[in-house]
Length: 488
Image 1 (cartoon, rainbow, N blue to C red):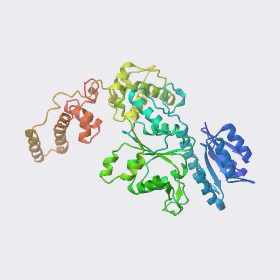
Image 2: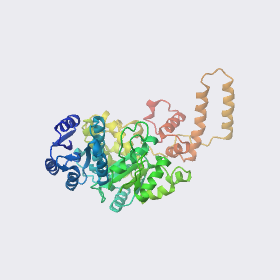
Image 3: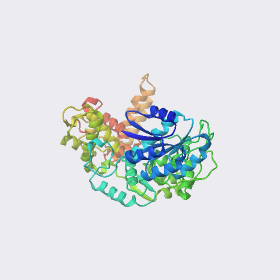
Image 4: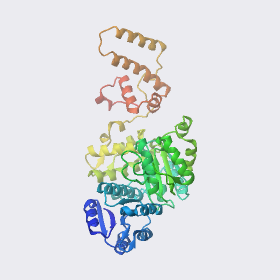
């Protein structure tokens, strides 16, 4: 159960906040005095604190310093009256997480506390390489004893203690945030906050506010001052996922912050400072984006203090058995299943699959397999259809790799002309089928029979290409697919 400490000398505030926040997942400890609060902090070490700025004769700023000495990673949210707002802002520079103004907006209170709880889970969830995990922890870990993963872990060990920015590159689903957490947890900033933000998941108009904060009235709907992620993360580490999706205007603000540690809130004139280590990640080719004018070259070099390239899962298949068993234990707890082992045949199928979605796809496949499985062992027959392929990727259906002749392309044009002169109501679908037949055959030939490469050349997904190949091979009946030797 998560724990929050509330220190406030007003009984009504303590009662209201406790009734709002207390739940089966969150225990709210309350203290009426500074001494009582410090005693609870020393004994219980709660990761989140709601702290009144004035506690009788004592200043909340003094209490804040003592709380931080006891637990430097604690996220402290100040509660302040209208007349002391500027003082609360000063506390942000000392490392406070946020502040709330009385009378409290209970929706805002809940939102800030929920955000702090999510951040605490990221900070405290272990990301160390350790296969001898305790299944009940339910946390993500770096799993893998193969050479590729061992190389990444060695790089983390070298990079983490150095206070430089890190750029993590890799396909979607390879675990870039997990790598960022591991770097943070082994860094000199591990006693300070770790915040993660997905630049692709936030609308362009709101991303700057999320990162740098905004002043009241800065734009429609800005009904109060907002503290941004960089201000909240002072002395800590911030993880910018999908940084390639960051708009150019936000990139300019980022560059200034990385150059001199200074920024301004949206709609504000006050220059603020933040000492933050940035770990950025993307699956995109930033150098190509620079050439296209979609990413700033100067920002790229600021972010790329050190670069880590994560291997896709298909390049470290030796780790799949460890990953699969680890996920099986986790999902058993989450789903209430009781599968004890994974059959050798199922593991062989998992290792033969190319995993275009990487670890995220493996998680999805195993979760679905556990749901439909029966008995103590996870058999190959319980795996979703896409993970059951038992042939190498370079096996191609007969005749599908022949290059279409010029005559065949000319016949397609004549065929279209003929169909347009008929009363056939399904001309478009019919001509597309014949076109697909020629295009897919040609692409598969150029790709050397590899479906993954052919899909990349055509700009379509592997499942889409797989359906087209099956149709060409005369396997349009899905029920018959399972028993055929098809490329994956």
